[in-house]
Amino acid sequence: MKRKTLKVVNPLGFHARAAAKFVAEASRFDSQISVVFKDKEMDGKSILGLLLLAAPQGGSIQVRANGRDEAEAIKALTALVAAGFGEVPRA
Amino acid sequence: MIGILVVTHGDVARELVNALKMIVGEQERVLALSIDWEVDVDVAKGSIGRAITQCGRKDVLVLTDMFGGTPTNLVLPFADDDVEVVTGVNLPMLIKACQIRNRPLAEVAQIVCEKGRESVQIAGSLLKPGGGA
Figure 1: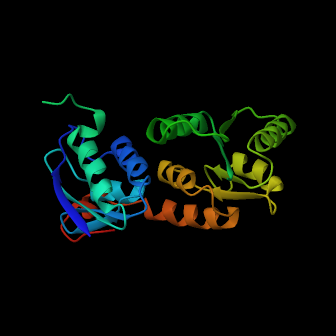
Figure 2 (figure 1 turned 45 degrees about the vertical axis):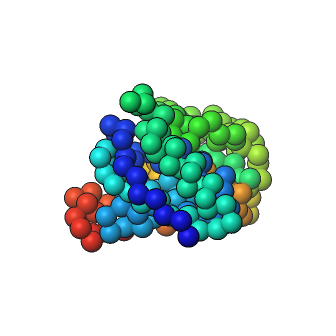
């Protein structure tokens, strides 16, 4: 299993459209993917699950991937979160 | 893949589907049908029948706003093995339905019903450490 801790950078946090983009990206991979925020771990392929994390801007989330394509999954999801889900210009 | 039809009073259905598409993107065979307040029953039943056909006729999940309300009552005669009706539609139910629409209709209806109930939360208690979910 691979894990990566990331900061949520977009102003709206892990909201509905962001969660939908995350799930669309995560679903491209066979690996089991989850996201941890505070004491909650949610399925990275479920929009409603990710919304329940209620991770705001500045929140520190951990993305976990387990499976044959876990390295690629972490890389792609890291890029998506770091880019503020495409909502904020890169610094 | 199941078809999804949202039927409500007023414009609620259309706006729910608009919000859904903003979140998950365009979806095939997901339709909204608003039942006018001054509804003619036969006209409304005709619209519902056509909408179900547009959703694929077989394996159509119909989400209505309120059990006992006119939209639900008008939809119920269409319920059979190919058309499942779930009441109390909300945005989380719609999102969930779109994410699992390749599963069998009865299973989708069951999961959507459960997710709809789970999605109603007192937000404050959910945000407390160790609370909710």
